[in-house]
Image (cartoon, rainbow, N blue to C red):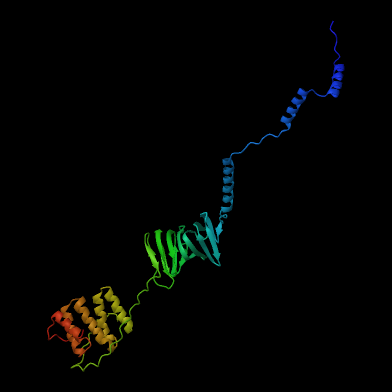
Amino acid sequence: MMSHRDFRAELKQEEALRATQGMPVPARHAVRLRLQGTLQPRSRRTVPRWIWAGAFTMAMVVVLLVLGRAPPTPEALGRFQIVSASRELTTRQHAEDLEIEKGQATLVDAESGVTVQNLGPLVFRQESGGLRIVRGGAELSVTTRLEGSAPAVVRVSDGEIQVLGTRFTVQQGEGRGTVTLHEGAIRFVPARGGSEVRLQPGQSLDWPLPEEPAVPGPPPPISTPPAPPSNGPRSSKARPPGEPKTPQLSAEEFLREVDVLRSRKEFEGAARLLGEGLRTQPPAMRELLSFELGSLLTYQLRDPRRACTHWAWHGRQFVRGRYDAEVSRAQAVLDCPRDGQEREP
């Protein structure tokens, strides 16, 4: 029969033995090694240097992006809404003037329908009905106006540009500038008065405009020595019945009317008016009027018969006159007979 072991009694004996003799040397050595491997800290892994360099570079890039980011672009500049703008757009406001110092922007004024795109630095000002370009360059476009609507107005140093719907470029300097029309039609109205100038696509206009030439006034009346007494009474030409009388004009108005007829090449009308003036204008003007009439008959109308008759009469009326040399030259050109009939023109 198998005998039953009393494990509990054996454990008590073993415990008493360990208390008196201690743990065997091999077991104690094994336990020490086990404990040293558990308690000793593990060695850390070494991170490669290129990883540290990459992380540092990424951190610096993020810092530079945050610090160097441009301030947010404003949504409006005065009354103008900013449609688009470059990152470097820099603006400033001086009292009523708006200035674009750097960058580029496209601005729209819904009230006047004007769109402005600066071409470099630009100073402009909002005014009633449009704007004023103070300094700089800009390309402008205006929405098409309905018929009967007031035009948009772009003012410059020497006048204003009135626009009904078009695209053009303005360059404004100190007291002078240029406008170039790309599409549509514009008219330039000078600030100092004068005729407006209309532009077609492709045309340019510089200001200030040249001074308009002054209209020359009539020559001063020529005083002549009293005419010698004639041999007999002067004949007078009767006016046909029913012919209207020529209204009495002043000397200045009369000469201006003659110049107008001559500029239109209405030489017969000018000759008739000069013949009427010989009877109605002051005596001090008669020699001048007679000479002008003879010149018309000689050089413009080229009527030798009437011209020779008139020059003969002129020589009788104005002895030693102011135009003797010119009269002799005209008679030589016409080959007038010496015994030309004297007759009142």
